[in-house]
Length: 190
Image (cartoon, rainbow, N blue to C red; front, side):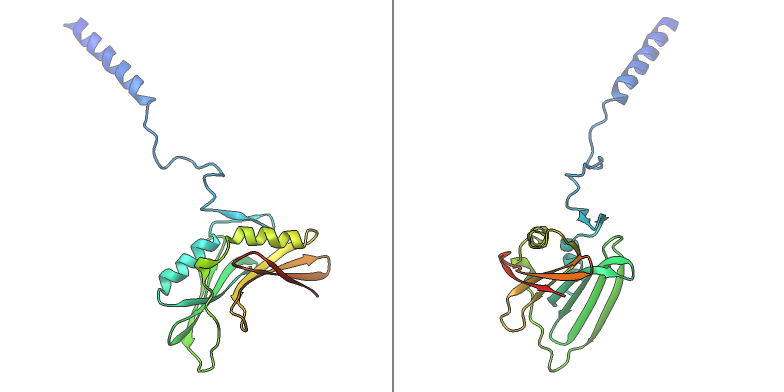
């Protein structure tokens, strides 16, 4: 009887040891940097951000499903990079901002739409990928550092515009691209 218990105990120990190292992979595995491209945006001035442009737009559209987007700004606000999205609906003007580093909503203002409100809708689904626009603008100012960018529709032509703001020494350089095609439009030096 003692031999049977010993054999059964030994078999159980071996079975548990064999099963212990063969855990099935889960979806919670650690992502490599290439797998993680959708959850952390590209570096900007050496920083990485947990909120991407696409996530900021989706969050705004979730908060205001009937609103049109008129502009999107990415810049440093009080020491933190933020996405500021302006929009409107039939009755309201909307200013909404999210911290790009931690996803915290930092501004959510609405006010009654003025009678003379004339902002154009920015058709965000028709724009080039933001990283491609950033890369194209960097080629136009290769010796300068990108410090912010903006997307908005031109007031006169309704053309969607990407403006990259660069610093080169004490000079400020603004590169303007067509945000749908990536076509270079102009450069401004201050």
